Image (cartoon, rainbow, N blue to C red; front, side, top):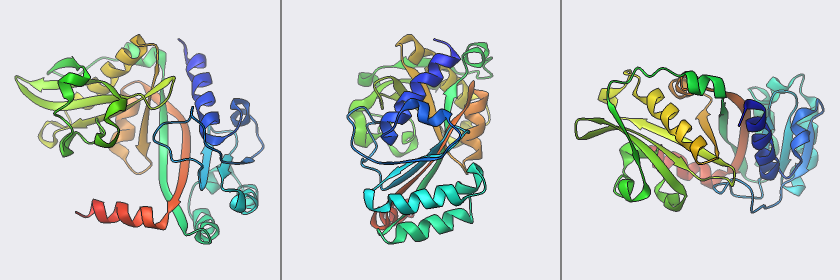
Length: 262
């Protein structure tokens, strides 16, 4: 496994997710496709997409509902730059397009891929013991404090975890879910009183190495505004792979907002 192979695997996965070809992300022309279901897409995605924009840096590959494609194409091709499409005020224009389908932009995320050299040169600052956990070891850990590391709605996808311990107390947890046939996604949580001690980066890096041993590519997702998570990805040996924005129904967004306030 090397960085080029990792990128090719990621491009293929994005192609499954976006109903296109891997080489579409390498060109300099924006492309728009009708989104169709795929059994090879990331397992947590709800396909077909209403509207989804992905960029690896060269161009934008958009996919969405058939009735929205002409408007989406007009939107991505009218922007002065790739970056313009992924930021306000352009996103306000996109939301106006989506309004006719009772949808809005919901998720805005950075996706990180491992840099082989950086992952294996990582020097841990963590002074606490780290342990590899199997599903039977973390079956009781589907609790709010570990909601990023483990997903109670997709328990069957959680393959491995690494815990950080202060004596017998679990103080940090990184989990990996088999979200794709070739890539496993990392999530991490650290108890508030133990943060800023190098635990998150140690857990993230450790589990990334374990994922490589299973012959999968680890990847990491962070919301654009989550500076702490982005810093953790970089510190752990990851680098930015692609950016993505995804639309969801207004009812879905309202439910998310209500749950976040409880």
